[in-house]
Length: 326
Image (cartoon, rainbow, N blue to C red; front, side):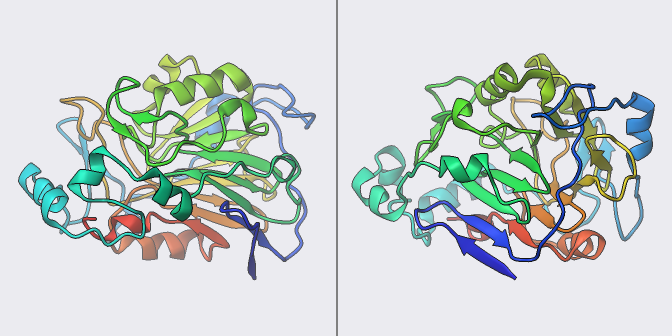
């Protein structure tokens, strides 16, 4: 049974079933916050990955160096259709604004009432219950998941703007409720895809500056060079249905398994790099708890396959705002 905790706008979910904390180790032979240490070779890491490529569990295909969805019936909208959505479709969200006027000037007072920015509970973040899943929504797609003795940050964006240069691009509705320096110790970061609102250069650099080689990065295929260029170590690329056990890269049943699962989406950061990097979702499977992060995705049949392979999930983070143009 899932029970929602917290009363101040941040969502802390706790599973009431008792579990044992998993033993956590570092791939670099360095203690993670006082935990036991070990090492793992690249061969061991590769052997820990499981590859599926079938009708039931399809891989993304590459055509002329770009990933394509392996199922039919989905394609990107044209610029004309996107403009029609933006200019002509009604605003059906509960967030104040959403029209053309509000795109350039938000009503902060209305937003303060509807979507207040509140500081996370520091004590709860620093000492989550060992027998639960705890999730903190940091804003937009960024979430902090605490489960099985791990602190896992997904799609970290702490900047005010989403774009190639800070101060330009799309400004977020609400500022991040905390900084990287205010986070608890982080064990792993997962990235779903490379769009600017899910992958922020300054945030990645600040995380690396604070946690350095203690931090493990799980990223889609094709993104490792970009993350490495930010100075990060311990960067592991996965294709759809690949699995890695954190953090000793063995098939230990007590380890937490990170599985990169499909999504119906796309990638781009520049003018001519569309779909050179893969996109997807994350299924994080522990001895007692299971968490699903959908990333950005349209609805499609693949969710049934993810549930069949890795479910049932105790908790999921799903981008419900994408089910209508606005």
